[in-house]
Amino acid sequence: MKISIASDHGGFNLRTDLVDYLRERGYEVVDHGCPSVESVDYPVYGRFVCEDVINKSSDYGILICRTGIGMSIYANKYPGIRAGLVGNKKTAASARAHNDCNIICLAADYTSFEDACLFVETFLNTDFEGGRHKRRVDMIIEREKEL
Image (cartoon, rainbow, N blue to C red; front, side, top):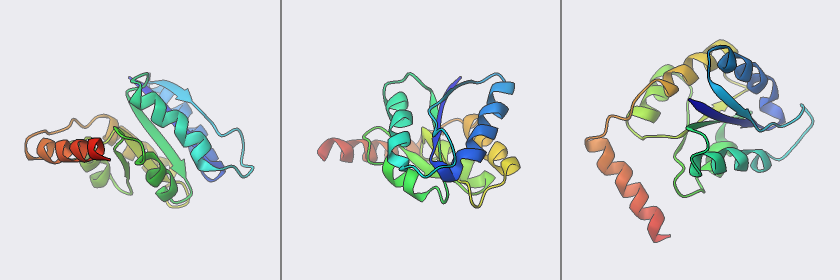
């Protein structure tokens, strides 16, 4: 499985730790930065992950900023992206099972490394349930086409 990941300066440390964790577990990881803890604008780095997921050069994406909110707002501007901000194991599972999210967003200021690993593993290993949830995701896709 190929994962694209990026963060702003606020998510730098969590991102670099997650990259190592995922690679140690056999995931192919494309790390789009940012390069340091010096202040940067999150859309610059979020763009790369969104494009990888849309173009199917990565299976899923991970975006990290201080609250996760900015990255999730930005990512969801892309048609075809369903980015979910998660804060516990249940929301990580639901993001995939119910919403067919293709990007997980994490809040570096409020998520420990251990929790981030749990949330990401849960997200990556949960299948979309389809059924009534597919109908709802299809409605989102149709709305994107109208815009």
